[in-house]
Picture 1: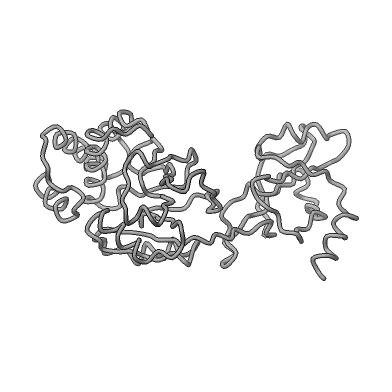
Picture 2: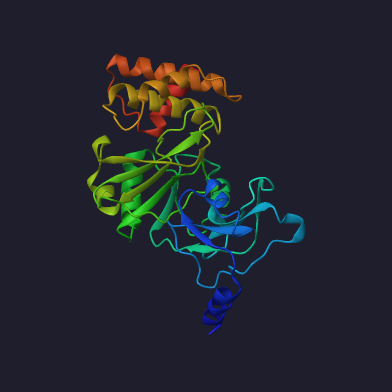
Length: 318
């Protein structure tokens, strides 16, 4: 009853045009309405707006020329996950203040139905780090202290109940506009998102965020099964401690040197790691990368997916 009443009220009171677009930062769309309306609503066409969203809303007098954004939230926690969902934009190019004011009125909900898993490898800080991820997605389950990716995939596969699962590195921090309403083009592919990293300045698909078919968790998959989504999901803390700074750089260098990876610019990433000047643990990143390159060229067959093997190698290279 309330929703129907609100919809009627909005239609009666709403005097601002609605621009449906994916170009939520293109203010030229609003410029076209300057002679006919003081504001326009921008609505992101990728998502569904709540039926009771108050399009009759008006800004306070001291914020009349600001841009106002209304969040898309996790339904269970009402935690904002992106702010490019609905915006009220002044049409006056001369008076418009391009400064976003975030309003508390929810414009849309994410209703993700796939299971969420966070993973770690022999990390004593796992549960502390998980609390940070739970602030956004409290339904994330944790797979901790597995000894490598092969064991990890089997562990997730045994617990997976949905056709696809989300997998997040425990050191991953969600970006402000990363959303889990994802529809894959293929049911037989692993989708990987780019992330910023604390190790260097190139955003790349580090494996910190993946959308994986349940069947591939048990069957296994390779580089040919991976599709990269050209969006940045957030940031991976690749330098959480000396061992992780070294081992992540080492393993990336090995993988990118010996594997026929075509979904990213592996040479640029290795070079960025070798020359990084970012953070207090940059020397561990550099040394890990150099050690990885040398290891890959040596033809060694040691299992670098094994976390204990990596720890031993780290101790030998310190």
